[in-house]
Length: 595
Ligand SMILES: Nc1ncnc2c1ncn2[C@@H]1O[C@H](COP(=O)(O)OP(=O)(O)O)[C@@H](O)[C@H]1O
Ligand SMILES: [Mg+2]
Image 1 (cartoon, protein in one colour):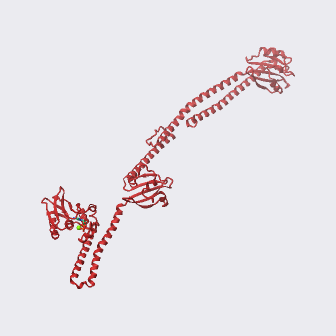
Image 2 (cartoon, helix red, strand yellow):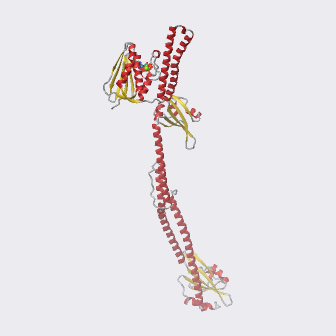
Image 3 (cartoon, protein in one colour):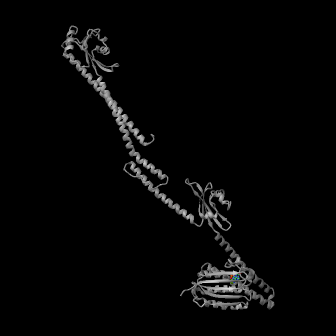
């Protein structure tokens, strides 16, 4: 209980007032008593002097002969207070009483009279006034005694005036004033307690309020403000508290903002992010990482999760690598580059590790394609070169002599060179398109015209294979904005394919139709068709369904990918539908030029 400032305040006040009152009271009462007694002593001496002065008999040198007169004087002329008694004592051996205000004591030795204090009588024998206060324990009275020696002319003590005076009243007055003081002290202490409470409340009240607010604040409620009632130290404390809260609230909101920004970033970023503490507890994992690692809701430990994908990323291994490194993680379908780095805790020690999973499947695939492409190109070039080389060698070895054979050989060499040149020019075209170096001259083209031209160009080729090729034009508006050479290239390739992959006696039909916003050129054949599993790949570079056969036909495997690239550059699409052994339909869809 006394731990609270409030109680301590009251206690301190109480002790202070108590000490002050007690000490002051003690001294005042003591002083008061002293003054009273001094006054009494002076009074008594004055009484004695006046008694002596009023009795001519006493002034005589010889008291023995004047004893009768002295007695008479005492009885008649000396006025005594009700609480006073006087004894006139002779300075003889026995200190005989010659007169007394109490009857019947004459002729007695003063030593034998109980009312007379022998001690001070003896003390005054040497000529000095002696006095004392005697307390009577029985009736609780205080009697002041004075023994006053009187000298004759010869400077000898002739006798004593012995006066007693009941001064109990002085003590009772002192007692009364002491009582008064005690009561005053009590009242003062009572008031002190009450005032102490009130004053301490005015001090501890605001502190208590502050404490309550601080507690609420510690529980996360920052919407606190203390009321400032004064400009004193407590008021200042309150002001500082309010300032502190404002600052804290601002910092907290900044922190919350930052946190939510980071959380949103982490949630929506394309990379997987996983934060693990040193003991392997997962602190944070974003949705992408959850998906990559197929995390279940009951998973808590990192090692348990990562063990499903690889053992190379166990926390031990990461620690061995000094919490820093890169790892390529291959799952069934995807490939991820995992970068990990440590994060620091509050003591600037390594608190754990953050792992970032970057999906590099596409990059991986591209690299693979690149490698394949180079391999393909080399292979495609090597075949004609080998043929040319072997035919040339044969010619040089003497075949040149036989004209017929030589002509045949030279024809082969010629066609292989053509193939090589086609291949190289196709590659160049693709490469230019890849690097966006091709500049398209987009112009208004009438689809009917260009289809008709291409049809005418390929008619001979179709006829030579005994293929029936038909062309249905569309009389409606069929203007498009296209690069003329580009469109021709597309048509030549696709109609060419239709003829190429249709056996003798088959049909190829070209139809132009119109959708609301697009012109559709449909090329349909009754050819070999494309198996389902190859359909998705025929637009890839060098992809051919039947490699041996198509090469024989002079195909490079680049035609469709070139056509698709050109179409893309003109916001157009090429759709391919095919049924194996039945036939193929290719739709070229080009946005209409309205106007
Ligand atoms: N009309 C078609 N009918 C059957 N197969 C086709 C047809 N068009 C294309 N293909 C297949 O798609 C592959 C790729 O065609 P393309 O890129 O034009 O190369 P290329 O004509 O040089 O062989 C061809 O090798 C062929 O196997
Ligand atoms: Mg082709």
